[in-house]
View 1 (cartoon, rainbow, N blue to C red):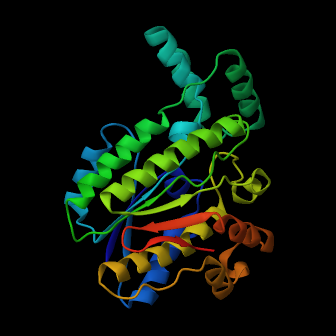
View 2 (view 1 turned 30 degrees about the vertical axis):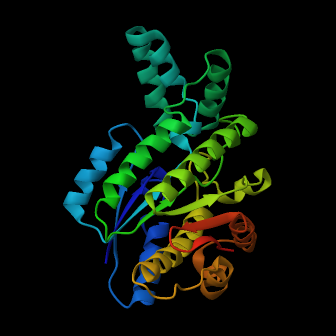
Length: 296
């Protein structure tokens, strides 16, 4: 089985050790459940208007048996100072924008305390710009999903954005959650109309749990996120495949998956495991064939 996973930098970036990436756990668990080899090809998916054409080319190249979209809040909830400069001042602002992007992307300086302080100060003075609005992200994902469903025998799963943000320094939490919820509702509606699977949070992630999921760089999501989706996606994919084949779907229980795997062997603390269980109570997996399912 070949799965095409369209994802983001938390899963594909250099900050995540190759062996720690959640989709590798997904592949191993699926191989055990399905009794066949599973290959997961992961590609970044930037939600620009050209994404549907990019997805079309990836479908032709890889010919997957299943496609999964994993969304990040970064494209629509991160206010970028360089982007603000570029949009406001045009060519005159581009040199300053390039410097900001270079510093922000530096492994040494981009996540350092001086850089974070500078980003905070410049956001107060200059302001930041979002790469996309929630409705623009929804349109890009919906257009991409429609390219996938043309291949009628291929299941599609959309994982909605996990959290309002990965750093409170980015954006006011109330505004961040409002923007996340706008995208959540738009994606849920689009997936229902397209008859594809959708995973989403009907309730916000409690802010006191956020630190359990952050990476040390305070920019990406960390090991607990990888474990959450590594365990959960394997069961959701198996359930979708059962339904598509007309079989009784296997039940989904993230708590049971955690107990079976043992948190210590997963590289997370007992506190992180409990945070995963708490978060899971807010998740619903929406099937076009059998409705909404809790996953806790």
